Length: 293
Image (tube, helix red, strand yellow):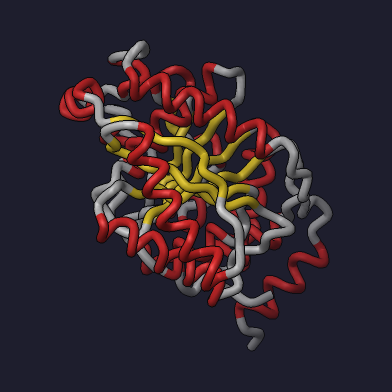
């Protein structure tokens, strides 16, 4: 009996449409620890990009703790696992949220990603092909920390965005995450860009201090470069919008937080558009399922 990797390898040879439209940019947002505002940033980033005319889809890959649907105050139609296990077309897995943003809800029963059958591989490939044809940007919201699933998704990204706060433990955990990207050979400086966002800062100088502290360690011990993408100030509108389950870019579009997120979105999409590395469905399937092909 053929193992999963062998069967998948054979299927890839037979599949004629294994390459994703290279106009779809894959941005993975991650963090070293929870509680830094990562998922809330993802939701507002997606809305900002959508307003810029970029067809944006969020994949909630924080398996087991998925909450993008809660942040967007929208009931998910189905989940990521349904795309694979229930043979659903991507159109039935995508849920429409505010401002035209679409999202794929995370899988709570993540153990079902094991022992995937041939037909389920095929459906996953088909789904991502359709997604690439109808989206300009795919934002992947990973779980916090050094989860294997998070590392898998980061490996297929054009841009990896690490979110931290000025809290010393958050900075330390962000460094540990980046160190793991290097140790696990996930980060490839020639194929992707690594960015830092500092959330919940009191002023611009504080964000500079966070970047300097982290960048000094990264440069000295990891010998790579990280781009300071921007910062999000501590904003009472942001806190109240979370309670209201209304993204701050909608609830308070003129707030400091909303303007900062818009600036980050602008720089991020301009940076992403300079990367023409073409992704293959093979790479995506390999990443999601953790199979060596």
